[in-house]
Length: 521
Image (cartoon, rainbow, N blue to C red; front, side, top):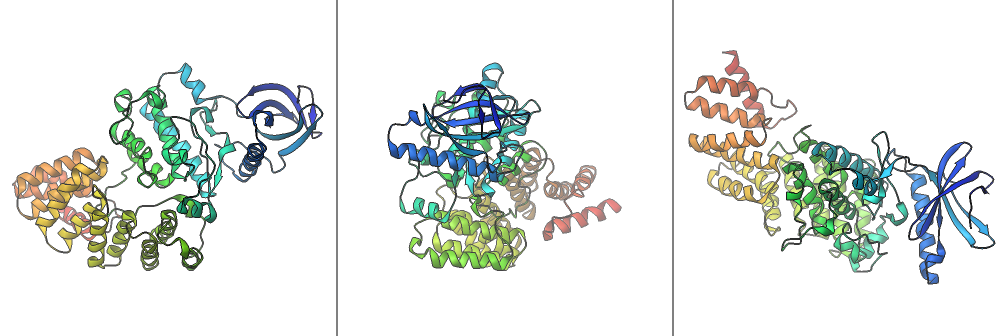
């Protein structure tokens, strides 16, 4: 057994024993004057040979993963930090030396502090989403996020620890998930999603656990302490008065029962946090950007021709999985998203259509294809794909409804179809930015039909939900002008001028130009 005072590997001097968990003991060691942590796997805690071998494999995997990741929120591990130590009494000891993280874990922190504020929740969730973005971009996912596995350093930096359960995302792993074969089961009751109980964890499983962690942090109560509704959603919000609706909506979405209904990558979480924190508007445009799927493909591809080659190889090499694995379709969708963001719309269209060959009912990819067709000026395609996205979802897709409603206004002059669709989308979303845009578009329809009173109601509601919505101010200026309220219209035209110059939608460009001419007179 390792004891204080020992020198390991002619390098690490053992200072003291720190503690012991279910499968490992930790020690403080000194490495050339630098304090570090030594983690030792306790194989005596495992009964069967197969279980011991699995524990060793996971321990070695933790060493490999940590040595490859470089982020302030992940413990630093050197490539040679894993080693075995022969002990006459205890046998072979499996050891891992890592950076010593000063501070306390969030489970301990919660025992001494009240629930966190909205501001701290946004700050901490941003830090953790950025850490997960790094982990997921390297094609790993953690599988055991909870307060006890998050350290708070004295400088305020959060560090995600205990990578013993980490899993690599590979084609083989995704194939296993698609055809019903199970992986390793890693469980932390209250934080673990349903799919992980069935040993079918995916990267979005990390977001579920992260959402449950923030329920604990915002309420001070363990997730198991809360009841659930008939849809198995946690009823926690009334116990977290500090959490404003946009943040609470995001956390609820992260805890969605199905992985496909959660934010599909860390970047989406970061964008929504910007909106929740007042640093920006997530969805201020009726032409909503395509939606990303799981992050396995993010940051791993070169030029478009490489993406197309990869997508084609997926079809040829995994044809036997045709339609059986939604993860394959998710991966291809992510490649399409990357092309879309690079304004390679033709390539994006091809790749989205390829994803739909694997899973024709993937409504988010239908929606993405619709947005791409609109960029290409193929409005019939855009209308068709947005409608399929709506039809393919039990409750409808409010983002697709918003886009399709705008198409009915701008391209088909079908005000009746537009208003029915937009009003149908309103009760289906909790996203205040999207609600604002739906109200704005409804107000636009009423303005076109000279229903000024109704237009005013919806446009004022749009502005109440999102005061920075310049298009809503542009439309309200036109309503007030029609009512003869010149002074009120002037104030709205000034706000209309603040429309984002990067917003090149024809109607916004025209309204901004109209505002300039009105204010020049």
